[in-house]
Length: 89
Image (cartoon, rainbow, N blue to C red; front, side, top):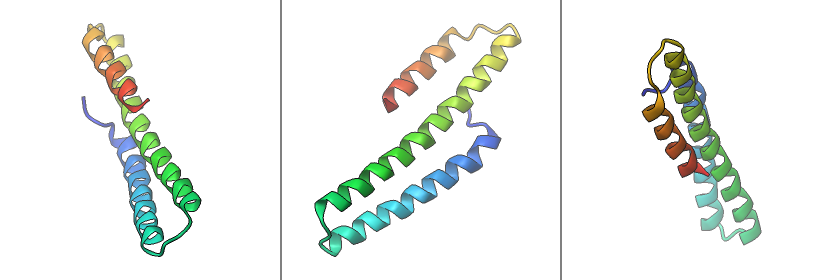
């Protein structure tokens, strides 16, 4: 199962945003900023990564549903998707 091409651009944007946020957190730590401020930024990075992961899984789910409409047995794919989804939860 591959990431849908239409989702790829959005996922890459989210990951680049998270990359920038991580650089910001590193800079905050190097500057000795308040731990509460750092924690807020870390939570934002975590949410950005979660959203990227959910977008990837949603893309796979969409492919599975489309294939199931073609009469294919998708039990294994749905089990894989469930496992991937739970790994992000």
